[in-house]
Length: 355
Image (cartoon, rainbow, N blue to C red; front, side, top):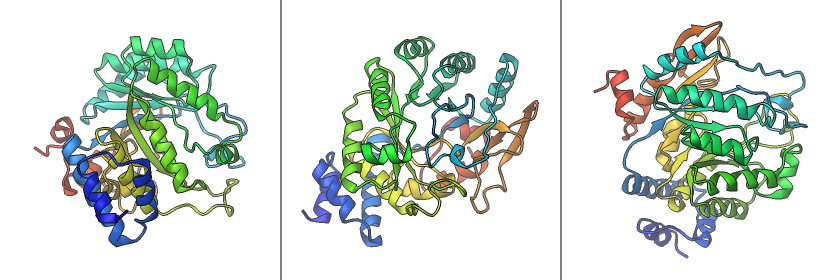
């Protein structure tokens, strides 16, 4: 295979598993990955247009019951406790009204894998948010059974997330010792089989090979109702079991995976993580981000913007109720999207007076 020929062919058609592996193995140098990014961006524009979506987020709505916790999670840090956010119907209405003013159209709601509590909590919040016209994505891992997904579909859920992180069974057991890859696969197939749009994430840098990554991407490709693929990358919390044992990958490694993913998932939403690298994800062919828009959280516990140089300047924290705030990152990230040659939703432009 020749690198330029594979990329030229990718402008017109989906790449094969063999070509995807070739690109992973031959695009590590800057001259190569910049060409890869250019082709991925061209495919994105041709197949999906020029919009970049910045979704809202409401998390920590249920506690996680996976035990022992996943080694990359903050729950694995000794002494760490995560407070759960609970809202009344009146509080949810106020949150919805506040978020609506930012121009946000999609909100992801979620929390940990908690089979006892998650279904009822998610269904109640889904119903409240749909009353206000939001698109809603639910993410509680494999905590949902068929009847819960059917009920969510009845109430108009737009997408449900079930991620594997890695499909290498040995690595999965190492980094997610309390979790079940088979259960996650089964949940994803139920979502897909019921005709609900499925979102699923890949975590780069957990020890997987390029071949593992290719097989993961093409496994997801086989799910006909797949709507979004998220590319996350391993970040290690101080004091966690992974500290000193693994070296996290470069953001470029995640970006290369996004770009190769774009040449496979030509008309799907591709999401990056970590908003401080938003323009890198755009360059690589992504067209969606969750933690780069609006988030609902306890005052003083903002997640978005953490660690991003200069990002906290311009983020609006709007107090809503009982110590909770809506953090609006769109004044920063929407402008970054536009500066990168893409555009945001008209509702976001209008809210920011960018028209």
